[in-house]
Image (cartoon, rainbow, N blue to C red; front, side, top):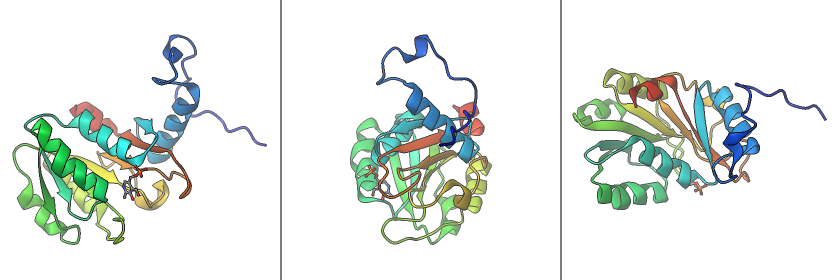
Length: 190
Ligand SMILES: Cc1ncc(COP(=O)(O)O)c(C=O)c1O
């Protein structure tokens, strides 16, 4: 069997791996490889899609922020946005995924993130990601994409300046891993 070449900077070998729940070489390598595939600087691996989504909300949103989300989203994500986020005073509004022209008018001064699920589950609705990325960049808003069905090459580069979130299935429908990656632009902003 061919041994894959390590990508990214050399892995730390000493202090970093003191407790496997925090970090371990296997997860580190998975994250580095997925970030490289996505063209992102760094990322996080999680054991489920919902932890990736929740983690990205918790990392980038704070009390008083507004999240603008497409309405066609996975049911559990809808629950997190409508039932959990308000507990931390994070507001939200929804837009129609099939009407990207309505997005700009819904952006508020406190909008921190646009969240889209594309292709959506189960309707398989699509949105022009490049267009949404341009709108997000123009308004200095993060773009967070739940991209559960598509592969990195088929769904475009993450260097449009966004937090690019891919829930589970990096290689097939039985995968039980998920991850989200962070672009340089997102890291600079936060
Ligand atoms: C689009 C989408 N996002 C998120 C999730 C949640 O992923 P998980 O079940 O790994 O938490 C799913 C699960 O089917 C999904 O289809």
